[in-house]
Each structure stands twice: as C-alpha cells, then as structure tokens.
Length: 146
Image: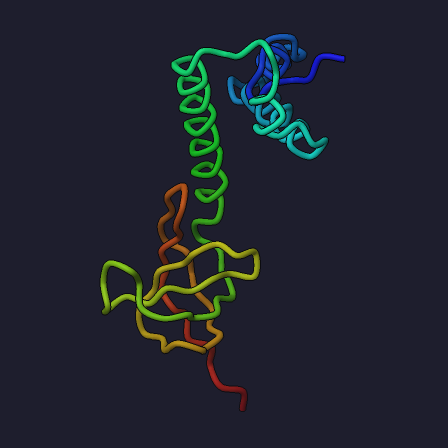
C-alpha cells in the first residue's frame, strides 16, 4: 500500500479532478481537504520521511508555500465575512505591538484587537476590519436595562 505524502500528487490530483468549479477557490479547497484527510487518517510528515522515494526539498518547500498561500487566502475571505458583525470578545490583555490596544478572543477563538476595554472583561465588539489572522473592532456599549 502506497502512502500519500503531504501535499502529494494525490492531494494535487484531488484539486485537478474535482467537479467543474463554480469558483477558482473550489479546486484549492479540495486540495486542502485532501491534505487535512491525510493528517486525520494518520499520514503524517514523519511517515512520509521514512518512505524510500522522497520528494526533492525544493518541491516540498514550493508545495508548502502554495498550501500556506491558499490557507491564508481562505482565512482572509472567512474573516472578511465577519466585518460588520457583532462578536462577544473576552479581553485578554494588551496587543503584542501596541500597549494602547487590547487583544481578545471571540467564542470561536479568533483574535480581536480593540480599544476601550480592560483585561478580563467580556464585551461586545463590532468588527470593522479583518486580515487572515486578526479582526479589528470597536467596543459596542450596551444600554443599561431600565
């Protein structure tokens, strides 16, 4: 039985043999899913490293770079969909790069940068901007109940 190598020809074939895509992202998503299945099924990089036939280092590096690029693009698109939404955020502390800006996490563990909150607070944040890694928003004050 031949094992699949991380981002192997099997994963790349999944992208090229996928049903006609409505968008360009669908074949790339199929390749990512194939890699994820490899991981879940236990075909780890350590298994591939023990195989007799090895993929050249420059090919491995290029495949990894392509995979990271696709993942970043998909993460950016998913995070962009959160712009304008209201998220509940647990404030953790100052951001790594600016002590004036607080960093927190949504209920889905996404990093949010905001101002006007203190560590330990659970606040509602209107998301205004997003990158592939981070959301940025403004604390939304909830009026007190009468």
